[in-house]
Amino acid sequence: MEIVEAYSWLFIHKEWDKLKRMPIQDRGFEESFREYLYRKISFDLVSDVRDTGFGLSYSTFSSVPHELDIICVKDKDLFTFELKHYEVSDITKEIIFTFLGKVMDFYFKNAGVLSNYKITMLLITTNKNVDDSVRKLCIAFGIKLIEPSLMTFGTMDYFVRDLYQKIEKDDKLKSETEKLIEDIDLLKERYDYSFSNIFRYKDSKIEIDTPFGEIDSNEALNTIKVYYNSFEKVRQEWKSKRN
View 1: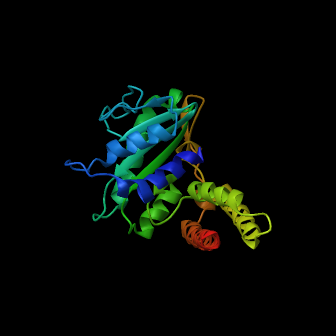
View 2: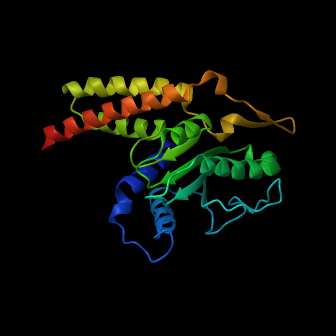
View 3: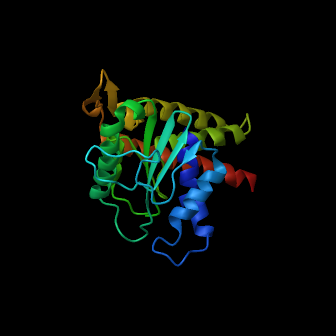
């Protein structure tokens, strides 16, 4: 469901700046994001605030409770969100590994049930200066990093296709956008995977099916930046023609 990534990006890229800040630690970021996502997408389940049961009243393999900011379920898609309202503080590698560790702890205890879902991890941040090392970690472990300054594969694919539909048939930008869609599709085939593509439950055992030997996070990130810049260039040119 790329629409989840797309709406998450729209929130931190546009909506958050329009909202009145609350006098609490995260300025109302989690509450506002939760309400926004709930309005935009009809989920079957949305976890309660301060939930420590993975949205499904589950315990962990370690017996240590973990709070994950938001869990959303739609059919057999399960989305787990870690929200970081860090406009100044850095998004660190430790944040990535802590997030991954929490999800693994729940999965190892409840793999028989959770293996029926496609689990997608999303890290949402308002920080506009995320370090490339963090971006590469997220690519390697299948975590969707939603930030204001760059798009994920899924987010970019969603908006490029949307732009393609809006461009007139005889406009040269149509063919440029079509080529960009094809390029993004090829990139997604190789690099766009999730937690459930790595951790699999089979014959009462958890298997780790890593694509790590086949991927190059440097190459993936550099290509994303090129495609994102191409998308922005086409979008701006299209907007200028409309004005």
